[in-house]
Image (tube, rainbow, N blue to C red; front, side, top):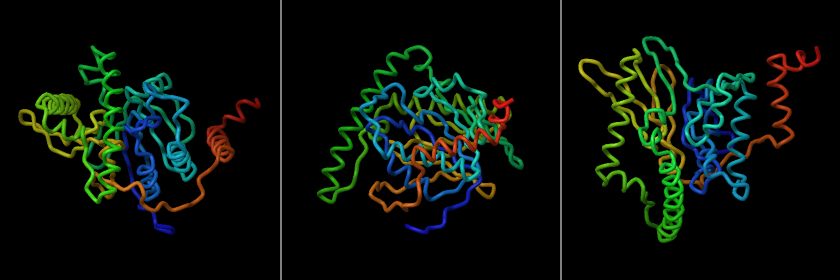
Length: 285
């Protein structure tokens, strides 16, 4: 993969990475990020998992993802961070802009004949609104399920068998889970239609999607960027078209070993960003 030309894209949306958890597929995400060069990268929530964050677990692969995002900034990519429920502490900094990095509760993109509304989606989750303790308990159970699933998949791959997804099968077979997803999508679609948007993009439910939802005599395109725990998906916009990109489910894939900045280089990159907005000059005055 060394020397591979990166795909130049207008916009890339990723969500639900959950850095800091055992289920996060950071190696796969870094592998994907190394194949692209977007003008705008939108981090649509739950990039970090502050609910389950532990100092005892922060692998190098997770740090490489963070460094890769800083590398995008150094290459003049605009990065928009939209916090989700697992990284909601970042919402305190909504409206902050630091060079090409900004933190926003939502993003609105205006293209020719298309208005796009992007947000994480937890605001429309009834369970999140009324039973947060139950949701946090469920998140711990979900992470445990992913750990068991990963161990089983390791055994299956050793014997040359295909990987399976426990949670994917559960979602597909349990009527309440299917009903929840449908209800979430329809709620989001209805509000997007009421607000006059042509396309709405969410994350949150870990269910990648690209569909047209019609309510009454009006329609909206609903897109969901999925996650980087099981589905390994991102949304890409280029040449006037949205595409749901599925990364190969193979963390052992070759990764081009180009220069990823160390902590000193990251500090220098941050200084450049500060200088670009005149921070040093203001401080000196």
